[in-house]
Image 1 (tube, helix red, strand yellow):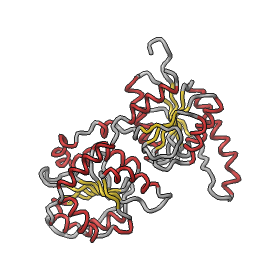
Image 2 (cartoon, helix red, strand yellow):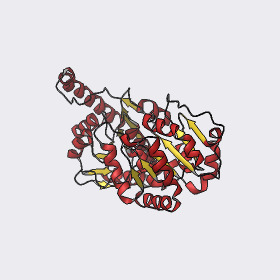
Image 3 (cartoon, helix red, strand yellow):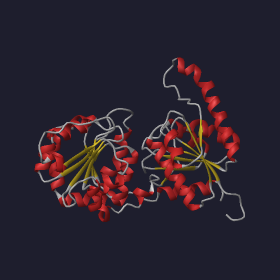
Image 4 (cartoon, one colour):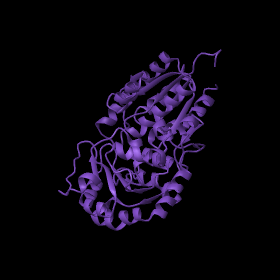
Length: 366
């Protein structure tokens, strides 16, 4: 690219970590391929992107929020004007950046970005994170042939299955090589089998209650626990001296790579990002899909469960007896845990970021 101007890419997505994390991983991969790449990120003031994108050092343009109305109410009457304003703001940002291509990851901000790109005649690339595509990406898919999905089962015609763009801390993670130091990082015994329990950044009350009640039974079985409970969600453990050394409960960790490396088995929700990370590194899991929403977490989990890399349990079935009768025996079955690890790694993708970058260059005819 010595004779051409640097590629200018506008990335749009936000609202949740599920949209923001793959966007940032893709931005990082674009810069690794060519440090001169011009990157512009579109997002909303209310989403996680407003904090995470500037912290990563990328230019950030705020678009007015224009959520699609799902029922006839006052917001529905305001929607056309709100969307028009968001599309105009997106188009202005694209002109200012002299964009060559627009990449969308879904969420509120993706719809005006797709409409603005179409209006300006810019090529569009779409990445859909979930097994069930969102409204924004369904719309955007009508405007482009450059569509990538995380899951093979995602019903977007003509899409290419590439996996999830992951941050390099995860895609390059050596679980075996880091296991001892990772456990020491969390003040755990480097030699003891370890169970990782987490429910995302906000935690999961069902998991927190079940595992705190089963804490003694778990440690009596010779297992230690790293339990990430979620910000603002403290748990009460029995007042036993042994638990101080074998049950580590923290509300948050910014080193999930080390949390994964420390673990022999994870118990967690089945958000798309979590699933792709544990599959990529071959971490077996007992999955408990979030019971609310449109059921996407259960759909997300299907491929990994079918491959044998994870088990699936309804949220309503999770209690102290489930921990004692299902999770502890699973951990004790070392051959099955090893088989699950191999099965997860076999369907995991560590190169989703580079695959999406290749699609971006193809769309931009570079």
